[in-house]
Image 1 (cartoon, rainbow, N blue to C red):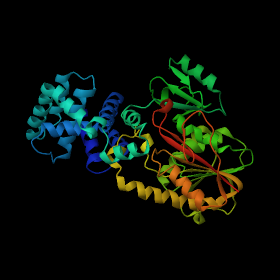
Image 2 (image 1 turned 90 degrees about the vertical axis):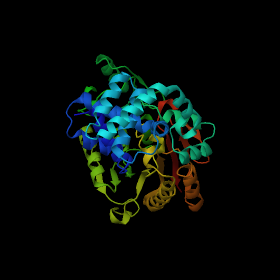
Image 3 (image 1 turned 45 degrees about the vertical axis):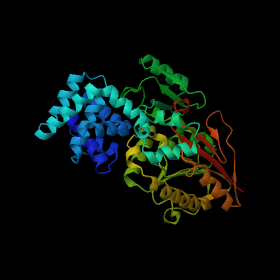
Image 4 (image 1 turned 30 degrees about the vertical axis):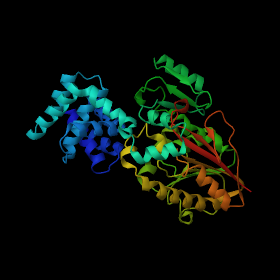
Amino acid sequence: MNTRLVAARVLSRVLQDGQSLTAALDNAFLSIESGKDRAFIQALCYGVCRQFHRLDFILSQLLDKPLKDADVKSLALVGLYQLKFMRVKPHAAVSETVLAARKKPWAKSLINAVLRTYLREQEELEHKADKFQVAALSHPDWLIKQIEQDWPEQALTIFLENNQQPPMVLRANLAKTSREHYLQLLTEQGIEAEAVGFCRSAIRLDKPVPVDLLPGFAEGMVSVQDAAAQLAAGLLDVQPGHRVLDVCAAPGGKTAHILETQAQLKKLVAVDIDASRMLRVSENCQRLGLQATLVVGDAANPEGWWDGQPFDRILLDAPCSALGVIRRHPDIKLLRRAEDIGQLQAMQKTILQAVWPLLAPGGLLVYATCSILKQENEQQVQAFLAEHNDAAELPIEAGWGISGICGRQIITGESAMDGFYYARISKQ
């Protein structure tokens, strides 16, 4: 098995077929047992996706005409990524990548020529890439323009952060342990970590580790969740006896955190339209020893699953562009299109309108996205408030994020967090 060929085929499924990188890797890993091989393939695929626009520009400078064969193009990108961004010895990167094309003799000579030319002309090619904005920032043109429009002062930071590997952050299960005790357990295992000051359950690791090396993971003492996502439960302010609705709940990290935060809820209902993703919610709750009412249903049509009893708290983790989590899912830069934003905005509005009647008077709804675009966030909430006389914003006073017209925005990379948006809306 040639790991570079496997990586190239995974990338082809993303670039050519529009499959998510996670799904393509999961499928490829079914036949690969070696953890070392899996890690190398994953590093190649994530790296090429992060740097795709730069690598694609450089490849175009090395070719007389565009490559129509998706696997061969992906293999060339894999080769360039190794030479530019990895510690693989150049001769090994070239020879092994060329070897991966052995079933296509024409491709072998082409990839060999491309990679060797790059090594000879690397400085000049990289200089050209630095002058071409899409390549220099490694983002699609439409996204560069949108981010610069919404966040002119923070745009460069966002682009740079999107191209970095994110930290691994844990959520200590405070129903089973204290954060201080769990930090001590990590220290005993030789895992270096630090507490995140503004989020009482969050722990940031110095280096990622496999979850099976985390003490007490199988027993539910800890979960993996970015600090930005962990802020949701606190903003929801759940109290004993509350009925809580978690809308668009899969894969269940926030569902579990709410239950860990308040064990004396009257009921927590978690709803998601995707049955396979709801299995993840069930698995997470089972590992953590938590119970919730899990419903596969359309949030835009509550009449299909709602029992008619109002909720005291609603968390709407709205479907969004996910542009705040590009660090974790770099294929978003390749798969997301400008026209998707308007469609997602319409869906968000529909769901927000649909679940509002389910909230009891005096209740609280937290609107959340992992996007950094204002039209999905503060503009969405502003429009909702203007249309509902019984809705009022509760400002979020916090040491994180940027206060906007409505709600609070976390810019990607702030305190090493993902990009996230939150707004609190009370019902009069």
